[in-house]
Length: 525
Image (cartoon, rainbow, N blue to C red; front, side, top):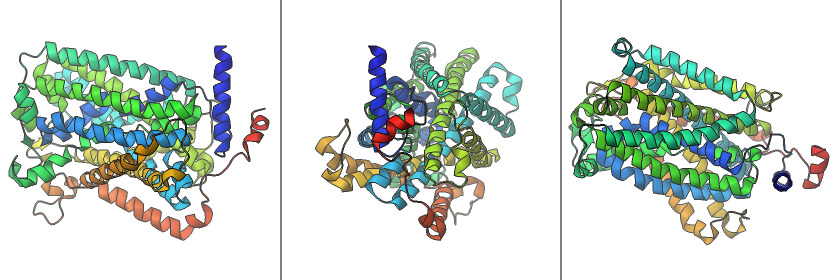
């Protein structure tokens, strides 16, 4: 009976996909839990909370993290439920660009797809590089000679190794990837729980509640390091929003894997909002455990605000190394999930003729994996991360400006690709035909709130993160520049030019690979 029920649901999925114009080509072997698991793995609080902790610490300190995390997370959940309604109506691997085509125009679809790709590429690159950084730090806690010779070149080589390992694993079957993502969920749940217990039980002392929720830091170099006044309140403090905004992103993976998910219209919708909610709660508790475990706030600031400094202060080398190792493995799982998500998105976008060299990116192996697309993404991720080889110090502390920029590129690209279909759904009003999971009339204010949050976040993400990165400043240098507006802005200019020069003549939007649902039986045999 269970098998019969599974087959019936799968047939309904394939029929809905056929109604949207596509024949089923990918292996539908993912359960609803697996669909949730990939978004939960891409969000990965073992990744973002660790690798971008410095963003929150330097741009406000404990007060920015303790209060900012739950506030920003609530807005992200609003964005998530708006997307849940859309994927329930249109459960295809194309995700946002397909929604934009159905609700808006071909041009909107084209721009949405490329913004999504840019965002996913940056997220994949940043997660792999963050994993390399933490693997390097993990080894350093067990080897004093390794730690004493820190090298950006060495970290970059580890980064290349991480990308290679992720690509090799991803070449195997979709079923194996689903299994790895299921394991990833439990690794994250158990790992976070163990880390919190360690940080509660082992440090010699803990910060007070007042210190965690009121202590401020300005380690950006702006306004002379002042933690008062309008400059700190309206410029420095908002920069900390990138910490939760970057960490809780990538949940569109549930959309991109919908063609491989059983019961996709319901499972993918729930996969999005559940992954956000659980990550927001778990991430906040994890962040608070970091903040309470700080032994010397001034030394954390002097070292650049990294979580590794917090851990080495609070724990013995062996325990600190253990925590870093748990995080590094979680980050590796996250990198695998990111690679899976972006390759499916590239496959779908290429299938519809929107990407140069589409015939390569849609070519599947015998395991139904888009291997050439995977290799292309790995190469592009390396190119995007090359500026991380440049050493940058701010206020005498090492600060990964390039890594920060990659984070911001991911945030801007992804959230702008979310904003376009959310706006189009709001504009469609009651003419929109919802799926099984719907917001009802609440879309009228939830969509507006989601768009407002994305607009504010986008502005924050393109701001200079240090005085040296501000053109016209006496200490200006290109190595300090937040190159997010250059990458995203340059991409938008290229997209505009490509559209008007040739794409509008050749790109017709999502292509039908099946004429009608009645042809499905013929296609599937």
